[in-house]
Length: 600
Image (cartoon, rainbow, N blue to C red):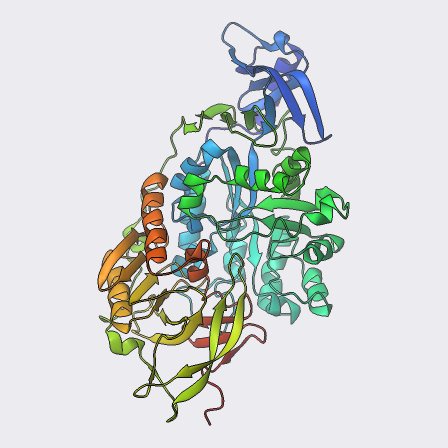
């Protein structure tokens, strides 16, 4: 699979020099703009940019010597010329879209580079799935770099995935042309405890001269945090407060501050720069997880930069955190992330640095969006049949599969309940008194049932537990085959009958999200590729996602972006309490725990 037609610097260096010197004409000249220089943190009025072979050749006060009869002239008209935006850590699958459709959705928002970790598809399809994501990313009109997933399963012994990733897989992937490093090392207890497999994956990555992504999802900044830092991760995006950000940059890690569909971790951490005055070079902005509705309705990295500015960050510093800082972190400072000679000609024209309207976008020397509309094609792969038939339930489910039986005869029991925390990835481990009726525990008093349905090996297994915080009322159910990271099926409901219907519906359509209320389906988002993605246009998927959100609200849910909370309840590497195909997981101890207490 070949990348787009962009030439390497070596292939076009002679022409870049000739254009800059005025001996040859540029392909394009952007004239009369304000050059936002992220190397020096300056805004330079009345400057021009000359572009040849998809790269900047000349960046200076007057490019008239670079203009020939066939040179295209773009009048900046005094607007700011800023580098294309880079997302330093994200998962394409979280957008419910294929790489091509995700690119088409974010290009009008000014994103021209993404560093993606396809560990969602790795859990379902293994290394072949990662290769499909990698290959489709390479042929897009923007730069999509792939991080080889590090943890499938994310926590060995606590979940079962469709496939497992090991050091040999990592070593193989490091030779692929679009691999930029190792995806987030979620198994932080493994690193802290010296797991030979985790350290071998990190070693293979460092041997290849590539970047190791981090994921330290713990508030503990004592010896365990220091042990993790010693294990090699070069960045971390799991910080939620100023102390987290400071701790990471002091250890030589980049602090990646995220604003996704449900993660609001910029405001609480950016004060390390805006108030504590730390060097902003150690900080990067990213999204982590954005679903299609956010992309279509609110934006992508432009949304994150605007938010950082609204939190008190200087606009040019915020832009550095979304451009040159990211490029430097991945060893690509000479390739992208700034407007400077030799770099990929990724540039945005905007009339205001604070509100950041994305008025015109160029990627790799070609105009890709104008006035909020994409002007280029995003090529698709032909996704194979085995990537589209991944929901294997083994049998038709019924209400009995979702029964929670009391382990002893009692009218009331103490249960370990998963507590949802709005706008954050961590959950709370709650202890609640629940009533027993006819030997069964049902949804009650703000507590809903949650089930994890195995869908990779057709075992027919269902694990049942309890969850609090969604606010569901009446008789309802919601099911999703997006269930980070093992991506079985998560079903939440107040009616066992409807939980069964919702689960069977996803088996019928090959994956996605469905919401039921009063025995009727209110919304369905089909995700036929690995049960995670659709190759339909983003606006179509977003419209269905909007219906899903409205359906959740009709069922009583008032949480912001509650779908993301739903899909993360099986993520057994983020505290405190999660569900897996093996049972309830106490993520503070990384061990299995019981649903009920004191039943012996």
